[in-house]
Length: 341
Image 1 (cartoon, helix red, strand yellow):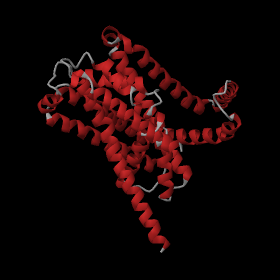
Image 2: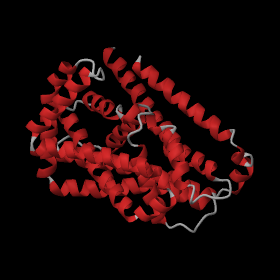
Image 3: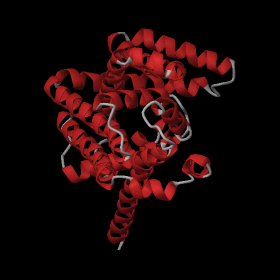
Image 4: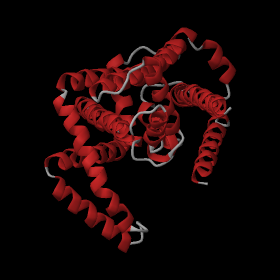
């Protein structure tokens, strides 16, 4: 039932966003805009998404070595795409890791190792993307304050939430007892204000999750060189994703802003919408792009730029990753039927 509601919510938000964009007066000359758009740069934007996926698969491949899971690049890429798909269609991207754990277990990987792999990946990704965005924010603070001040609260909130998340990650490693007490307090408080339905249910799982985190972080600290390589690859991966906007900028005939200008503001947009609960940040992503990039896209093409960006970075991602997930599901069903005969 919950999965069905997610699909309905995604479909509704996509339809609503598409309707708002397509009925805008700014897109009255849509055929002309499409005709004048540089198709080479759009193709490069699509290739950036492919680069993003390949990096994600390579990261999984490297982390498998860290925790002694049998490696195969194609299976690592498939696992990446399954995660991309379920992350895109669930609020806060919460569906990706459980779907990947399920896929790994179906491939005969012990659940402990599967969980450890994805926790390691999550920790490294969160640390990297948070510091990446903080550095960009510091460098571009004057620009944000002077040109797009209205977006400052959202960017700051996103960065703050991610910093708090990192403090919990490191806090569990350095002092799990204190962190456990804080979480128990929050669960009890949540139950009192009726935000949490059954605090005891979550408390029972708490020790298990903390143990998993400790094991995973220990794996990272004991394999520093692999962790460093994964961090570097994650930086490349993020840059691929943020570069999509730069190629859209060039495709529409603009050239005054630098590559660094565009990817730095794109990283801040990523932070600004990271705490929005809609699947894929749908709605918030388009609005955030409109606010943050209106100083770059002039002449009535901003909404068209939003449309191109979402098609490449979100819908293209859903179509391809969803296709890989569907093929994987069909192959598993066929294999199961073959074994039953």
